[in-house]
Length: 172
Image (cartoon, rainbow, N blue to C red; front, side):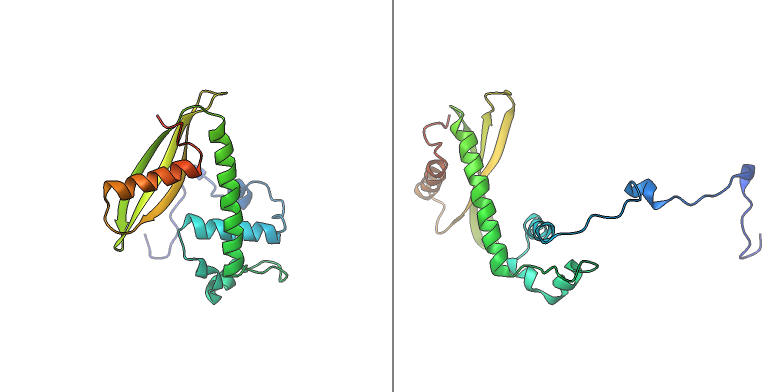
């Protein structure tokens, strides 16, 4: 076969290019992005990828985030991001405290680790939902441990988290 010549099709098959709608659903226009949608996407990006809050102040990040969007939209500042995340954290904690208030018994687990010469203690809580009888789990907290990892330091940290979520009398 000569260079550049087409390969003969077998069985007289016709090659047809797939339409984008095959992969992306209908050919309806994309919904208009709102400021709230952009804020939510930026918060999820920073949190889920464990990025520094200062990411939102990067000129390059702002250019990418706003690419193809309406000129009226703006990427939030670092201070706004921190404030919005603080509100979201409090909402999540309130919901978790409410769910834990409805159960009689819980179990907690803890894990300690060191990263960049800093020690941390993470907590999870586990319980059975009284209505559905499903096993439930949630992350409670991550605390920095300073100093030696003695029994007193660890037990004090565990007790503080249990009291913060009002589960200190429910732990099995």
